Image 1 (spheres, each protein chain N blue to C red):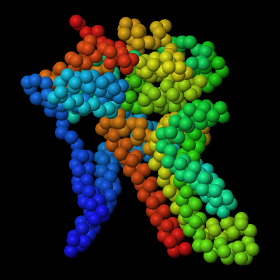
Image 2 (cartoon, one colour; image 1 turned 45 degrees about the vertical axis):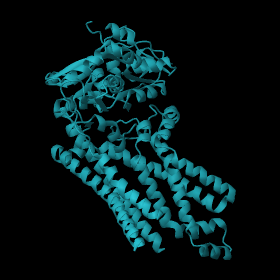
Image 3 (cartoon, rainbow over the protein chains, first blue to last red; image 1 turned 60 degrees about the vertical axis):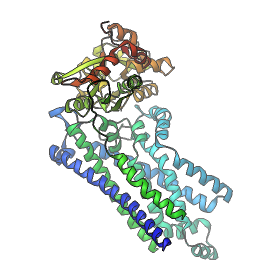
Image 4 (cartoon, rainbow over the protein chains, first blue to last red; image 1 turned 90 degrees about the horizontal axis):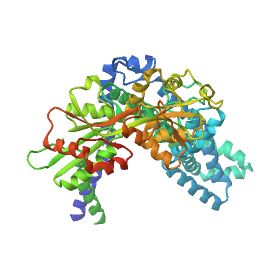
Amino acid sequence: MKVKSTDRILVWSLRAASATAGSLVLLILCFLVLESVEGITRVGAGRFLNDPGWHPSQGAESEFSLVPMIAATIASTIGAILLAGPVGVLAAVFCRFYAPPKLARAFRSIVELLAGIPSVVYGFWGLVTLVPLVRELAPPGASLLAGILVLAMMIVPTVALLAFAALKNVPPGHLEGATALGLSRWTTIVKVVFPSAASGLGVAIVLGTMRAIGETMAVLMVCGNITKVPSSLFDPVRTLTANIALELGYATQEHRAVLFVSGLALMIMIVLLVFVQERLQRRARLA
Amino acid sequence: MKHSLSSLLLAAVLPVALVACAPSEAGTTTDGGLSGKLTLTGSSTIAPLALEIAKRFEERHPDVRIDVQTGGSSRGISDARSGLADIGMASRRLKDGEIELTAHAIAQDGVCMILHASNVVASLTDDQVRAIYLGEIENWSEVGGEDAPITVVNKAAGRATLEVFTKHFGLDEKEIQADVIVGDNEQGIKTVAGNPDSIGYVSIGTAEYSAGSDVAIKLLPANGITASTASVGSGSFPIGRPLNLVTFGEVSKLQRAYIDFCRSAEVHDLVTGLYFVPVRTAQ
């Protein structure tokens, strides 16, 4: 009987814990929506796209265009994943199929260490090292390109570790079959491993993308934070996350409400990505 | 048994953690003797100073709790007005629309232009600074420097430093053509120190401290007057700003006591320690 009662306590406390975790996400979402509704009704949804610029604290003459920030977020994320995706996947391939076991183990611990470095450290390094280098190419240095490079460095470890896990999940039978057929290692990887691990690799890239979208501190430090739609890689930009971090503490009234709207915009992007990731994962499980 | 213990612990900790997140009581003050709680919100420039002073104040009055939160001068003003804070902090003069509030200056600060230490330009007139920030002058060669494009560093919206700057130079925030926008003074200094062709503006105290500790920036004089805490103190530096504590309506005994303490000679060491200039109060 005693065992049963402690069991019940365990079950209920587990239920309470998961209910708390689940309701926290819902609470955050509700809170974001509630705060945003105020911003949307007071300012008007159209103005987020049609206003000429972002000048949020000018009283009646305020302008609330979110277009430059949305463009910056999309551009920096796509840029980062274009760089980090192939590098991360190829690093995982090397680690899984080419590297001697000792080297592979060392390599993996380095990558894990990289994944653990706080983003503000990447940002600081970017500000004092990367930005001056970019400035050599084209001033002012703090730019979309600097942001892409820092983001790419930050998400390479995430992509590499997840891709490695995906490659490890390829059934051994596939590999043995390929060996028996006398296929070269590269052919095996391209024709057998990649198709089999495609969904898992997709998940790795999507999770990397999510990390890039949400990243705040590092991009705040290296991107220049100008609210203009970039026309080249060397233009300074401000992402949605940087905008919130830069201004929320100083915002009142409409300005504050609009920052919550930009938070909601970010949340929607993430929800879409989670949806894609779920689809990929389900396919990975079926494969 | 081990499992049940840890699950019990978990069940016990969860509600506590949730309660800890609940907002604390609004500051209340009581009459007679000094006890109660003061909440200060506002300027991130003043907050470190207010916090240091609050520590010393609490040592002298053990029944008093002082809570200092940052959020910018505008937040300080609006919280003081709405009663969310007992005292607001604003690192600028009050505007015309804020006359119903009372400002109590606790220190003086200045805002100065900074360049990279290697820049050959030794001074800029107000008109030149204005033209640079409006994008009319885009190369250092136009103001006696080398042939290099100017990187204009500006502050993010809502910062008091930005307001002091735009007011002094008669600029409109919307017209400024910046290349980089920074948040706090530290980020401004790092950005300018990392880019030999940049120009920015920061609090004089922070700039003086950084330049003194071998950061590659230099402070530009304004109208021929050297930018330093000394010239701010003498009142000769033209871009000055008071660091104000702001109250709304009747001032309680505790509020009065804390504000007087902030303005007294007893905290001058804390004020100068943070590179601000103490106010000269009538002795």
